[in-house]
Image 1 (cartoon, rainbow, N blue to C red):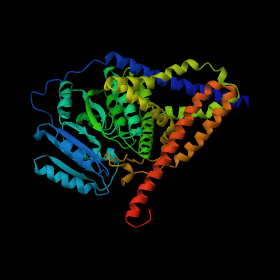
Image 2 (cartoon, rainbow, N blue to C red):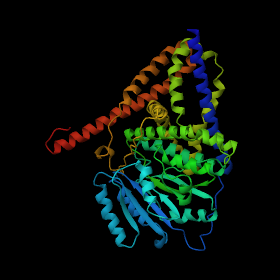
Image 3 (spheres, rainbow, N blue to C red):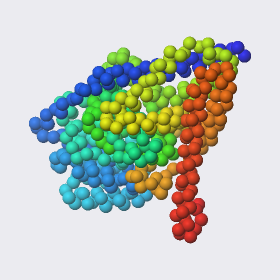
Image 4 (tube, rainbow, N blue to C red):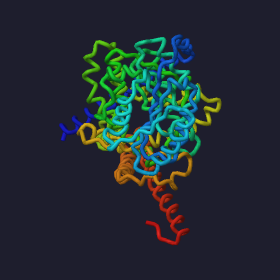
Length: 493
């Protein structure tokens, strides 16, 4: 019994220390951002010998709600028409393809060089589509937008000159803005999280000379960089992160421009957000396996870049560590072990993420105090999904086959009325059990370790929130479909 208790105590201590190290890394990024927060990069002069050719790629799969908006926005880009090509990389299996065909024909009739590209099979998912399109073009640069993004007309003119100024610049990422941040509590919470990443973390990585990543959309690549790094690969579900690290390990430089904003839709349905997070968790973990050794062996990056790059790749490993702390807390507290561990100072490192959200809102919005009211929701959602994301991490470690499950988009039309709305995940049953476990743990800890009770009640709140959110969405879907079926004189299915 003593041996098992020692093992559990060691696991708890190592998990707490690992979480503290990750949070210290976040504080370090915040420090770099603070030092460079007023620094702006002047736009280099436009190329004297003519603008480079640009291929705009739009990877699409069943996006009928948003695709026309995207095509029209890209058609309005202010760039020399003779140097601009557009590919709508369409893998759709519904009437999205008909909408694309009609809109492409319309813009092509106005003289735009735009192509509707179809494949026989959806091999390699998004990575396969991007690679397929690139094989058919020899443009100097490639801009990529997911279906829910709306690039401003001056996007290319705000980005392209940076490539002219630096021949080793491989990729420029711009900031994601939000089209529907105020739609509901979930979108408000996600906006906080995304702003923290794009205002503080990405800016700090770029200005501090650290490794950063292409975020999958609203970025521009030098075609030579993509090809030199080995091209797009579907070996991971985070093909953007994968290519980013391969390119930087070959000596290419990346740049982030927080002043250039491209707005996009935030998932308003919890089931869609859950699915997105699972895909990101699995993809990120796959990249740890794929790149960790190469990162530490590389002579193209500094020791600091290696350390911060490792923390960057390990961002979803935080999820199983948080779950492990929850599972170990009640038994170790009952045994009187946690009260003796000198881990309290490590908790101060946990201030990193909340400060990132605070300063990102403060730097972006005059009404930042109001926007921070969504922080408790973000805590609940972020903590409540640790089982969901841990299962995705385990799937990556077990090397289970990939299935790219896209995040559905709705264009604020009411997700419950969309054919793309998702049903609840079976993981909600595990979250219900964890809610009960955390509540039991809080009751058990109250007489022996009262300082742990607030920690456990955070888990009760978080898991309870995601369970209720999931059940509520199922009811909304049923009631909406019941109403529509009644109008047509039939029972809902």
